[in-house]
Image (cartoon, rainbow, N blue to C red; front, side, top):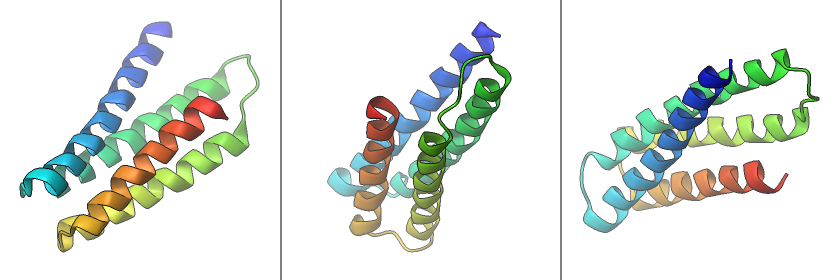
Length: 111
């Protein structure tokens, strides 16, 4: 079970890195693959986050449902912004996706 947890955390962190990389690609370099990177990475984060929540629920330790609820809402917001960014790319949408990803990391680290 620890190995599965480690793999999911690894993939979850890769998803966060992909969102930030896509944000930088789109904002700094103006590259067209930025929005797709943000979208695929946000979906990876959403799926792995839900799987990590499932593993946490199966464990013996108490689960902070408020924390996971906030993280889920922010992750869904990142997915929506990413979908909008793929449909009509814009720097403001990339900034929003990057900022929301950083907020999600902050919630994970400090709550």
